[in-house]
Amino acid sequence: MAKHGRQILMESLLAHGVDHIFGNPGTTESPLLDSLPDYPAMRYVTVLQESIAMGAASFYAQATGKPTAVNLHVAPGLGNAVGMMYSALKANSPVLVTAGQQDTRMLLREPVLSHDLAAIARPVTKWSAQVERTDDLAPTLRRALKVACDPPMGPVFLALPIDVMAGESDIGPVTAGPLHRASPPAADGVQAIAGILREAKQPAILVGDDVARGGAVEALARLATAAGAGVWHEGLRHHASFPSDHPNARGPLGLDVAATRKSFAGCDVVLLLGGPFFEEVWYAPGSPFPDGAQVLQMETSSTRLAYNYPLDAGVVGDLASGIAALADALEADEAAMARGAVRNEALAARGAEEKSAYEGRLKRAWDRTPISMSRVMAELAAGAPADVAVVDESITAILDLGQAFSFRGFGDYFSGRGGGIGQGLAGALGVKAALPGRPVLAISGDGSAMYSIQALWTAAHCELDIVFVILANREYRVLKHNLDTYRQRFDALSNQGYPHMGLGSPDLGFVEMAAGMGVPGRRVTEGDQVADAVREAFAAGGPRLIEIAIEGKR
Image (tube, rainbow, N blue to C red; front, side, top):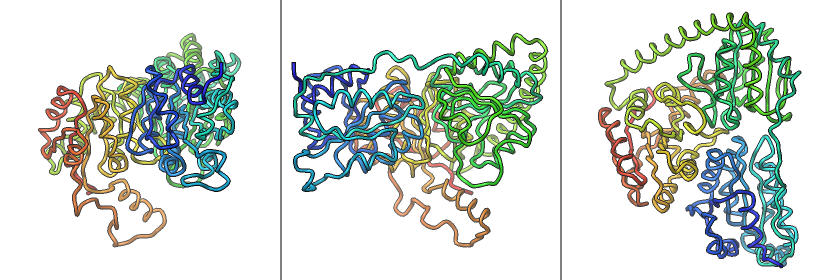
């Protein structure tokens, strides 16, 4: 029985397990919108700007581990979303991005809002195409969703002309079938890595987002303990792939190879697990690894093995079983375990020293006015529920956040990849839609929040229980830090101050903006008000906003 293209689209999405579409409606999307009442299993989340839809969908895919869909509006709408598509690509989010296209019968005449949509999307997706015939719709959807979910995962794009969606075809929805992508790593590869780890004098582990996504956090904790290895994560990450309060947790690396090499100083073996490694901000010469260090890697895709740096051993396969196999191999070696135990004691002592130093800094900053970032993070952690999921875009407060909160693994922490700002408020929509049973705390700087402030309307419209915290220092603080770094690195010392990096005059009123979009808000200026404000916001239910006046760059 022939079906319309719009029916094929909806039924194909549902067949692939897609149950959410994040979108901003437009005329060429009329076939999809008109079909929604016939498919109650599909939830359409309305947003007020296309970049919000893309950011929310990316974080939803991250929080669920399954593909989701975004529907954008022709060329301008797609253009609005490209920045967030780039972030989704860097985050490896399996998102099917669609945009309505004008009727193919008049594209030659370049009608209003038309363009080569597939060309616009191609640089920021794994695969990009336009469906030209209704008969091609189901096979193209199958391929697109298959490519999106192939490791390393990422967004794909399809342009959907309105006449293709309105047309009919006998070729119905079809999936790629059950694909068993998570094969155990080759035994000889695992043993090669295990053999080098056994003999290491000071091993280090660098962990990427795929460890959390692959359910390998518990196995990694075993491996780190067995190896006596410190565990680092990249400066930009999407997930917590290692418990932050584990004695072997070492925190984030810097954002250039020199800083990374300094962090790994003294290490003779570095094991890379589940990430693209490395996202740099500043150029520095040399290697991120100490001279003579052996470099090992385990990934879900051969694309990432030895991509930027040569290896002494590398293996592809499922991370959970592969890391568990490494832990088994080391735990079976009594001598290796004894050496690891000695290193674990040293790591625990070093961690205790760093914790004590942090507490000292926190104490010294406790009574500063405006409120210090370190105190704000401590108060937020004190006021938040124990099972809170944090969506983080605090940027310059990220080190204090990492000290204040305890992140155990997948689902506790979400942040953006790629460096683009504005992901936090939009991403919180997707995280809450994916984790309806967990309290969600979205933390954003004021500059970042203004990139996606329309997300507050969707939170109110969909009655999402999210507490949005805006850290208001009235400046692009990270840019001030980066300008200092630029001047130092390029010998461009200046007395010009920080041009165009202030957000005052006029001040941004986030409580007022939130009220205009249906979200109750509260402004906090005293440190002893923060924890109570957070508790009250979570107890009230629904979306709530707290604007906190914090210190600027000193």
